[in-house]
Image (cartoon, rainbow over all chains, first blue to last red; front, side, top):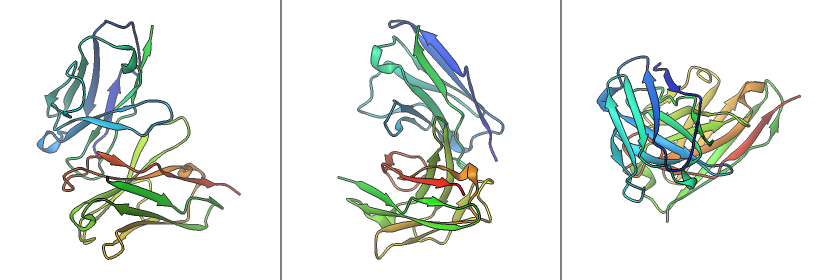
Length: 108
Length: 120
């Protein structure tokens, strides 16, 4: 089983700042099949990055994903108030298709 | 519009059994791999189980392997999760999920979930 470790657990930033979230895999993720999800309170998660770096067409371009193999990064260029949420990474390259434990992005 | 509608969640005793269902509409169900993902109260996401388009291949997390069984009926556009010998730690909202393209186990499309409580 591939274990995904997200860091930090909580990130406290202000609107306008840059956010960098990490997702590290215990083994190489096949085909870089790594996705990022945003979850807001009371909502189901929303996939917005797939294949490590491909952003969903209806998601703001201030979000970008990068990385390969075992190290992946989500960058939010300039935080907007609606960006504060919990972010999860998931690898869907090999079963079981595990999630990371999440990073909570909170307003400082 | 694609819809995934889960049902069957309930209060179940440890060691009992429960079957969850997910009715899919708005997509060609038989062309989509499907998964169950759960979220415990105040906790993170856990991928539980997945099944190929035909049902010929099934996958499980280590935490449920041997206790849960995933299946599907493509004639009814329905996904199932048979939960045997549930434990307190299986308490969660269970979501039926699939991907837009249908061929990978990413989770683009989510149902609203059905709540399972395991308690005596």
